[in-house]
Structures are given as structure tokens and as C-alpha cells.
Amino acid sequence: MTEVTLSINAARLQSRLLQLGEVGALVGGGVSRLALSDDDKLGRDLVVSWMKGLDLDIAIDPIGNVVATLKGSQDLPCIMMGSHIDTVSTGGLYDGNLGVLAGLEVIETLIESNLTPVHPVSVGFFTNEEGSRFAPDMLGSAVYAQTLDLQTALKIKAIDGPTLEDELQRIGYQGTAQFPDISKQVGAYFELHVEQGPVLDEQNIEIGVVEGVQGISWHEYTVTGISNHAGTTPMQYRNDAGLVAAKINVFINELADSMAPDQHATVGALEIKPNLINVIPNFAKFTVDLRNRSEIELQKAESALSDYIDKLIKKHGVEISKRKLARFEPVNFNPSLINGIEAVAKANKLSTTRMFSGAGHDAQMFAPHCPTTMIFVPSYKGISHNIDEYTSPEQVANGANVLLQTVSELAYQKRSLPHV
Image (cartoon, rainbow, N blue to C red):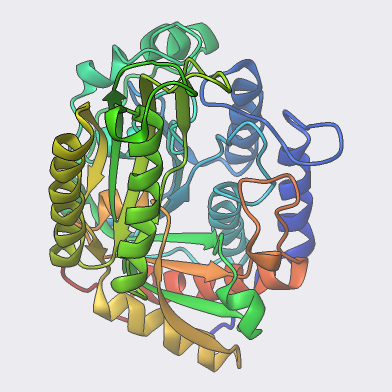
């Protein structure tokens, strides 16, 4: 086969990013396209129209995942790319969308090269990656990978009431395609994504070579104390739920400092009742988000928090209950694919650094089943999940070209597929 240096059409990719960003656009910038909402339907319709325009084979499964495939010359496992197009309520134009539209651009570039790949090449977008409307996040890819039961997922209720199945049917995206056996039918999975953090931007690095995804531990805690008069109740006689919540917030941050740099800890939501200036709180509900790239270290953080809570219960005479919201072990990506990404980036004279993802991604659902990795491009000032999220057209093109050239090496069998 004649050697061809492939390059994406940067203007076309940028145009599609902006067009998709108009669906659910917010005043002042950004986009709100919650999973399975009316705007999500319109976004899906737009992306599917581009897939149809390339005459790709399109499969929509019962959880609403959409996968489009360019046929290969042989019956071999596909090389898959993907991400998501749902957003948070005040999202930007790049989170998730870049991975999908760059994957589509890779396929269109392959078609325009007039060279038929040996392996099929696919691009997919997965339902409810954000978890903003339905919990948990990465829901569609978890069902696709058959680590979350389909019927359980379909019964999940949205924050505004209807079930996931209700909304899939309402917007016309509950398909019938069978879920694949990923270990046999997907030869490799790639996800191009904005970093959503400040490292690449601050260090002026063009490509993040992603080695894995941090483990995530999300729990909700409810503290029950006793309301009493703020002026007449001596400090030693109080059962202050608000104080206990505050102490836990401080504790986990000090814990993260002591386990730096890989431990992260956040109290992201906090509610106190009766929420009056002169009344000791009898109720506090809050979330704790712990993350670490090491499962052993993550478990240590969880254990330390549990021990501290036991001490608070005894000291302050309160009750504390815990509810698990999500728990994902850290994921390590495929070394061969990681090396390949790095080599392609350097061949394009792009600066690189190896890093772990601090956020969850659909890729982590694929990693246990097939060779998987991700590519990061910079996020301006590290801003994401925000209307000011921005990655320049040049940075977008850099990432998409690394994706294209890495995928084409495998699709045309210039390089052997790695093993999990």
C-alpha cells in the first residue's frame, strides 16, 4: 500500500463543533443539552445526519447509544472512537463533543483518502455520560460494556421525573441494535477530549498522553443533631449537625494535603437546616468526592474518613448515615496505545506529557474489555463545565490529527493490535 500522510480538515471539524454548539445554546455562550432532553434529540439528529451523509452503517441500541461504522475490507474487530454529546446545564462546546466530531472527521478523512481500511472504523456517542439528568454518569457506555444492567438503567428516574426509558422512547432513540462483545468486536478504543484542567494550558504543552483515569468515590452523608437556641445553649451541650459537616469538610482537605499530590477531596453540595442565624442546626446533608489514581490509596482515604466520622459521632452526640452515589476503581490504559499516541505526537513535532485524567470518561468503561486510551488537548485556563470552556482551533486540529494518524496505523494494519 502506498504510504499516505493523512490530515484532517480542520475547518470542517471546527464548523461542526460550532454548529452542534448552537443546539441548546445559552445566552452569553455555552450550551445546555441535558441527556434525552428535547435539545439532546436535536443534537443527536444533527450528528446522525452527518453520519448518514457519509453512508455509514448506523446502529442505535436500547439505551440510545449511537455507533456509526465505516466498513473494512476484512471481517475484523473495529477500531472505535467516541465520547458523548450530552452536556451539563451550563456547559461548553468541547467537552464530549470534540471526541465524537473528531472521530467523525477521522472517518471522513479516511473516506476521502480513497483507501479502504482493513479493519472497520467506528465512532460512537454514548447516552448520559455527564450524569446530570440521570445517575450514574457514564451510564450509556456502562450498559454498552454490559457492566450495568439494561433493565436497571431503563428504570432510572431523571431529576425532573420521567424514567430513562420514557425519555428514550419520547425522543425516538430507543433502538434495537445488540450490544457487542467488546473483547471480541472492538480491537481498540480511543477518546479525544479536552483536558478539563489547567496543566496543559499552564505548561504550554500541546498533547496530553493519558495513562489512565483516577478512581472515584462519591458518597452522601446525612448528619442528625438537635436544634436549640444559639444564645442559651453552652457549647459543651450542643449536638450541632452543621459543626460536624464543617469539620468533615476541613478534615478531607487536610487529608488530601497529607496524601498529595494524587489525592483529591471535595465537599461539593451542602444543605443545613433549619438554616437560621440563631438556631443550632439539627440537620446537615452533604456530598464527599474522593479521587486517587491508586486504588490502595483511595481505600486509605475512605478508611481515614470513616474512622474520623466515628470519632465525631461519639464526641458530638449526632447520628450520621451514608449513601453511596458512585464508586469506580482507577483505570490504567493500554501501554502499547499510550506509546503509540506519544510517538505520533512527537512525529508531528507536538510537545507531550503523560498524565492521568481527573474526570470520569466513557473510555474507562472500555478499558477492562479492550485496548483503550485517551488523548488530551488543552483547556483554556483549565475551565470546563462552564460556558467559557475553550480550546483553540489549532489545538483541536492537533489532537484530531494525532487521533487520525494513530487510528489509521491500526486500521490499515501498519501496526498490530495490542492486547488488553
